[in-house]
Image (cartoon, rainbow, N blue to C red; front, side):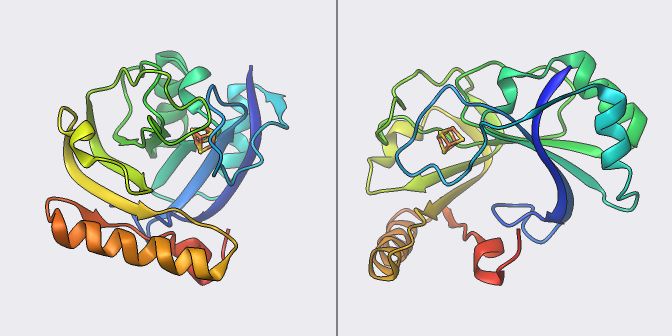
Length: 196
Ligand code: SF4
């Protein structure tokens, strides 16, 4: 059984897969408490894999499942990933803070480390390899990510409800990308579009 916060169909809003129709499985709970966390991930319902698959297959044409949270790696194992993949026929992506090892079988790993960003983000990151590295940028030293192997590196401005602060964060991130062009800009396009 897995504690599921919500399952919903939308577009991936961030990073390399931006704009891809995806079924999101949000698993409950996280081992970090970031000050800027914007997700109410704690409430959840215990669900079996067949129950999860049944909900996912309400969207048969969606090519991608995104495991998110919270921190989904706290819950999943290889049997879950392979079962989900075989029963749905969909590719599996994960969004993780990287503090917990991942099982085999995941098709796309988005590593979003929170080290040095407040909360208890100093829990060590154990992943050193991913498909995309997606960093919430708050002015931190980017050299700390040099040892992480990634096909793509994204900086993303920290979202805030304060429009002035939001603009400041965006411009600061744009400048950081221009100064460090091995990184690209990632925007939370779902927020801009007003979709989930
Ligand atoms: S790692 Fe992500 S889900 Fe966990 S507290 Fe931080 S922002 Fe929230």
